Amino acid sequence: MYRLPYTSQSETQLDRLSRKLRKLQDRIGHQYSRKPKGMHWRTWELLRDQTLDVEMTRDLALEVSLNWLL
Picture 1 (cartoon, rainbow, N blue to C red):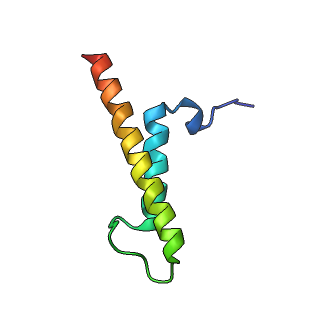
Picture 2 (spheres, rainbow, N blue to C red):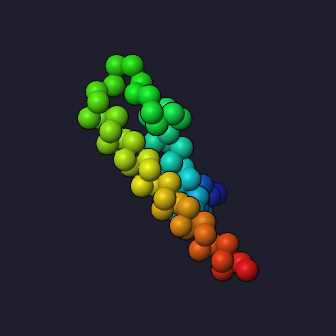
Picture 3 (cartoon, helix red, strand yellow):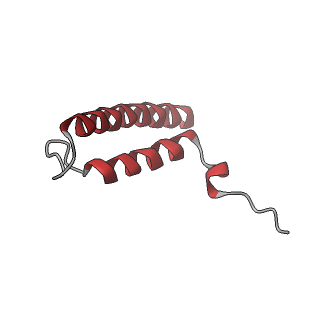
C-alpha cells in the first residue's frame, strides 16, 4: 500500500476557502444579481450571502498571508 495523502490534507486555509468559494459560485452562478432559473429565492439569497462571507474571509486570509511574506 502506498499511503498517499488526499489532496485536501495538504491544503492551506487559503486553498480551502478558494475551493469552497468555487463550489458556491458554481451553485449560484458567477453573477450575484441574477437568480438561476428554477432556484427558490430563499435558497439563492442564502447561497449569495454565504458566497459573500467566504469571499471576505478569503480576502482577509490572503491579506494576512501577504503581510506575513512582506
